[in-house]
Each structure stands twice: as C-alpha cells, then as structure tokens.
Length: 512
Image 1 (tube, rainbow, N blue to C red):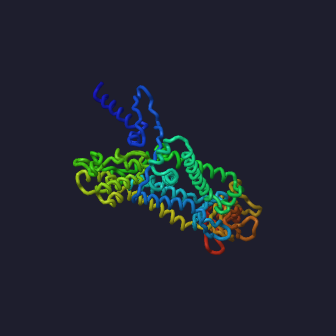
Image 2: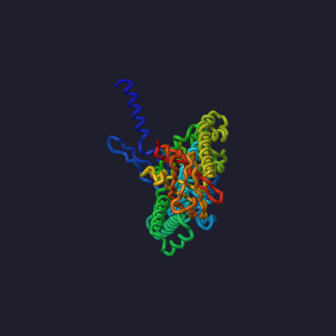
Image 3: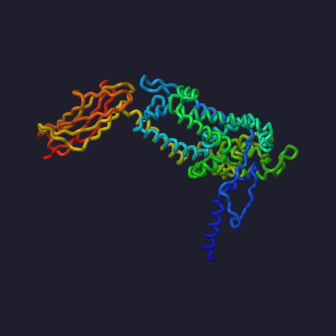
C-alpha cells in the first residue's frame, strides 16, 4: 500500500473510533460498570448503552444554592402565572397571560397579539435562540445546568426521592434490596408524589389556554372538556417519566443541544474543567495529610457522587456534562477539609488552561464574556428586541384589509358612471365598540359609497372583525373613468380621533 493510501486508512480508523456510538466519557466513573470491549469484527456494538441508575449525593455550596433559587423562581413563574389577574375592560379576559385559542389571540399583561401579528411571537423565538447562543458562547451549557425544564423538574424529583428514601447510600441500598415492605412503601410514596407533581405540571399548562379559576372548578367537578383532561394526563405522564426515570437519558439521547453546543463554544468559553496539572497524580490521604509529590486530588469521588449525570469531570469535557457546578461545590468542600486551595474543579477557558500551566494568572472573567462573538450575539439580540418594541408601539388599534372584486373588473351604470367594488375587513382592536369613518382620496375625484348605509360610517364591535362592501365610482368622462388604472387611498378613522390607518389600491376605468 502506498504512503498516501496508508495515511488515508489511518485517518479513517481514527474517525471511526472518534465517531463510535458509545462515548467512553460516559462510562469512566464509579456509578456505571465498565462495558466489555468487543471487536467490530465479531459482534456489533449497540447504539445505546444500558442505563445504570444514578443516585446523586446531597451537596452544599454556592452553585447548589443558586440552583435551588433558580428552581424556586422558574417553578413559581410556571405554576403561578395563570392565576395573575389583569384588568383589560369589560370586553376582554382578565387573565394576565392567556393563549385564547377560541378567539385566536394571545394576551401578555398589557400586550395583545392578534393572529396577523404572529411576527411578534416569531421575534421572541428568534431572541430566545440568540440568547441561548449568547449564554452558551460565554459560559457553556448554563441553560442546561440551571434553567432547562428537564433539569428543573429532575432536581425537584431528586429532592422528593431524597426526602422519601434518604441520601445516596440509603437509595443505593434500597435499589439493591428485594421488594419487601419497606421498598414497596417508599416507592409507592415517592411515585405518588411524583405523579402529583406531574399532574400539577399538566394542570398548570392547560391553565394558560383558558380562564384558570373557571377551568380549575370544571376539572374538579368533572365538567371540563375531554381535551383538557387528556392534555393534563399526557403531560403528567411525560413529566413523571422524564423527571423520574429517564433523567440524564433525555439529555444524552433525546436532546439535540449537547451536539449543537460545540458550534457555539470556542477556546475562550468558560466551562467546568478539572485542573489536572494541579490534581495529578491523585492518591489517598496518608495519616490525614497529602503525601509529598502527590497532587491535590485525593480521589474521594465526591465530584462523581454528586453529579446528576453520573460522569467523572476529571476525564475531561463530555457530552453528558450539563455544567451545573455541583462537582465544584463537592470538590471545594473536600479542599476545605484537607486544607488545599479551592477550585481544583472550576469554571475556566481553554486559554486559561495554557496560562495556568505556565504559572500565569488566568484572564479576567469579563475578558471571556465580552469578546467579538458574544458582542455580535448581543447586538443581534438587542436589535431584534428593539425592532419588536418599536413595532409594538407603532401598531394601530385599527386594522384594515382591502380586497378588490375583480369579477367583473368594473361596472358601467346606466348614466355612464364607472363603479369598482371592494371588500373591506375592519378589525377593531380598541377593546370598546367603535364607529369608523371610511373615506377615499385620489387625484381623479372618485366618490365612495358603502353598501347598506347612506353615510360613510361603520360600527365595529369591540375585538371583532367586520366585512364591509365599498363602492367607488368615477363620473362619466372624468379622469378615473377614462384611465385604465388610477391610484387611490382608502382611509379608516376612529371617530373618537384616536386612530387612523390607510390602505393603497387602484381603481380600474374603461380607458380611452
């Protein structure tokens, strides 16, 4: 085989090993047994590794405290928001946040979004995506570690599990013992609480789509629509399964974000890492002290035992790591006990690793946070936000849509007058019944008439859309009658003088 062919073959083998379905990073820890090494020639490898239950140990520290606060705030927002009231007047619902599917509107406190204004929702989704890119580029998977619903509800479920079954060692013992009275009792209590949390989760979700107090009464009395019960129980079941049993499997196999995040990160991204140049060679304490020549890591496995993903951060960055920071709390607690400096495991960037290995001080945190990539994301995020705010304040309380009737294009009346017909859709977004005045402006001196009324006034009920037929006429021999096409502008004004909008269209004449 020639040298180029040998290089290509070697590169292909390296790629095959790197792209293997089962990551070695997820297996190198004490909570999961080592998988037997098989040869691809003798036995096919599985795309998924068998799940080994993970029993995170309780830990105290700054990151754990921050996670508790974030969990309390996010769950509080989710469960309590549908119950907040907001007075919008007699014709509109008083629920602060409501997705009104029946009337095809979305209410968010003082903001009301109509179906034709869905670009506001699209803009918010774009902002959410850019925000996710920004935070990931600056500090890694902070969304996954602190605010992702899967993480928040899993934290809550683990809290219940710890409260019912005990801390890590007690849960491992209970997992290994047979199904006796103690295990059945504790599992029944735990699963019941889990299901009630899931039921509350599904119930809170459907409260966003209708009046929460009314729906709550209907749910209890059995008068709610079957769709409400179905949706609630589906969400309860998925929450129960994902938060109670799937847990880290959702992050590893179901969620695409771990595979996308690499494109958002670079060598200046702050992420959790183990300072192996300081911790190695690791070893045990000898007579309560670290022996000479040994690194600071005493191989206590505290960082592994507290990890909700069951990984060993000392093996380097891994797809399963959600950068929740619990391993930092556990390691700092150990370092305090043995009298060693903190942050053997901590947030750092690859550029800091090089500097610290050389004995230099790491860069400032703000240097990592404010750099061209994050500034670009921030600029785009702010630009979209400013555009949405401007559009929100510039929108009118009146919306008009004009559809010319082109079959026939025009009608010639008995006196020679040329008439065009138009269908106007008037939407009243003021919240009160309104009287609209309709007028036409054109250089051809066109005349406007409304079907069914002698004047040019139309009353539109609050928060409704009304269709009105409009006739525009050009006198015989006038510019409008003798021209093929004449530009015109239709005006719709609130008679109270609060709003005025226009729509440009054309008038079709007989021509020369």
